[in-house]
Length: 530
Image (cartoon, rainbow, N blue to C red; front, side, top):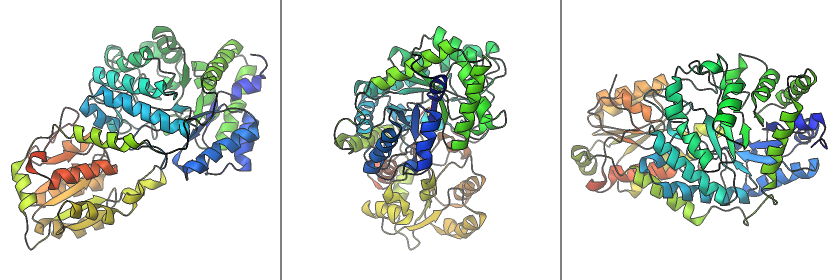
């Protein structure tokens, strides 16, 4: 193992994100000078499947070594690839189906598609168990509230992925589905009891290890009720990484940090110190997802940590062996032919969503209102500007022109008499004021709502539609928590996401045959004001 220098052993622990979709001189130098062992891909790195293959190949050719290439391809809202791979729904939709065969097949399809693109690790599935309180970062990314269900579906997807040569990642250990803060922005402190952590939140992670998962990712929150953990973020906790995950649960694979540049850690210390403390806690790979300056600083602090004796050579060598073993499992960078979506993928995604809608209750009054309404005043459809998301994640091309898209769906379903209004994800007060008279006059109003529980103006518009519309119908596009903002009498659909197959399925429910109408949902959807 000492064929590597100390700097190479330390640098190998870095998994870096870079800017742009071309491997610039600065990007090549970054990997050469830091000896980084991994590359994490984002939406900003992807222009086409062919470009991505060239991007990865060029970096590796220039630095003359193999990297561990990873991407967050969770499904639903966390998608960075717009070509060559199926977009599956968020985990909560699959959780509604409770179908392990779907989960396993999704994993297989993801593996085939991502290996064609040269990706080694899918940083999925999310195995956090959501609770009664809303979790702005997890929410719809979870399979649900039942730890046994999360365990079964997550393990099935892991087995599917790894059976076709793609490493899965169980995240976010030891569970942050109960967090009321988004670690991207602030540091959550989770007052969950040790008993609850062990009996509920660890259950899916135990199942993942039993399924042979290759990698884990920890989370940033503080768990003060884990007394041995102290008041440390999990990322810095030797107890959580070395004692719980390694010794108690017996995990022997590669352990990633979450992104060290997140707001959860920014106010605590520098990126360099965060990298050093995460390495001391026992992580194999440290994610720095944006800044080259941060990456250089991290390596500098790791080197200083080794010089002062806080990093142990034996542990560095063990980490290197784990990383090298994971890389060695794939002799070729690109396997399985040209990068195209599997034919079965879109069909499976639509089937999952269709089954997720199966338990919706009927509302014959609403059905009759929508289907039979042919008044002089047209129905009103309010739809959010999904294209605003395209700066950060993949938005399907058809949905970049929202009015054309949603109008086409309703017209295809036989409703050519509707008025369509497109509003911001968090609409301005001026937009809301301009809609008021139309809401009052419309025979019914369908509001496709995006996270009103997080956006005050969206909440204002939601209340306006509920109070002033003659017949309001809410469609909740993302997290399940918006349903708690309306009364128990107001009909709604939970779309479990905003992808095209989900919106198309909802339009079918609205305009289709009476037996496919719906109101309400299952235990994943909190309900009722207060």
